[in-house]
Image (cartoon, rainbow, N blue to C red):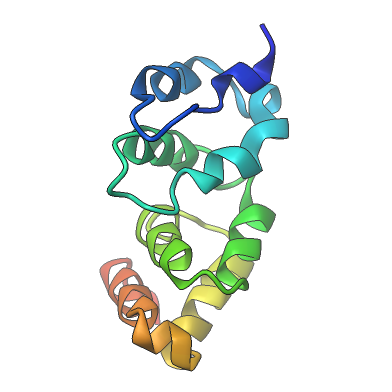
Length: 127
């Protein structure tokens, strides 16, 4: 099987997303950036199964998560913090979430990314 076949084709492609759970990080590593794109809008049906799978891999995808959190797509940051920030143990990712919570950019404030970051930190009892 070509691993790229595990990238959902459209926002309703939940059948493909459900197949991810049968693969290890090592097997799907090349398509991690493609999968992360599917959590840009958690209103898409495919987003939740993809996010659930990625939640199990946060220890391996910290650099990818950081790239999103340091980027300029505030909505993507919001969803990434909500789903992956809720479970990550990576100190660099947590430090970036703290930065967003306590020293957000104007755009992060406008899109309420800072509020979500504070909520996650509070929920996880992280100061």
